Amino acid sequence: MRKLEILNATIGSKDGRLGIRIPADRQVQYNDMLAYCGEKKGSYISIILHPPRKPRTTGYKSQNHHFNSHCVQIAQEVGEDFDVVKMEIKKRAIKRGYPTRTTKFHDLIPISESEASTVDCGHLIDQAHEVADFLGMKLKENNDEATI
Image (tube, rainbow, N blue to C red):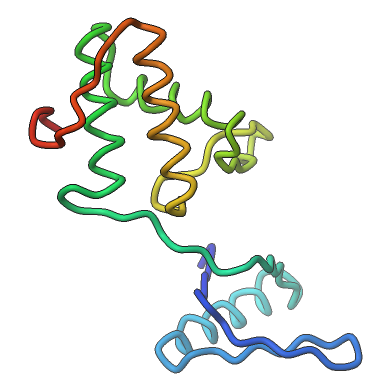
């Protein structure tokens, strides 16, 4: 087991001790993680705390669809692979505040879209518009007009 994420966990603190209430639907994964860490990691576990985030929207006419349709249009215009265009826009969006992570090879890369919030996805859409402007393109904003 590599990662267990519990969204909107209830926490409490007393005398420098942290208490976390594990939701019933995550109890099995939590117990598996503790067993794994006990066996393989000397009972150590890493905890990262951050405020809850609102996940990006997905599906038809969503932020995710909006961003990907812009990537398709730009890729078609410049004759580049969709994945290359998408990663380039993500890298450029870092300056806008798009989050990053460090790989096992110690490279700093943009986070996966699946981890992005609505604000993060907004950075991607704004960056796609900036790239299109730089290329002299007018992006179609109607999600129906670009094939993903």
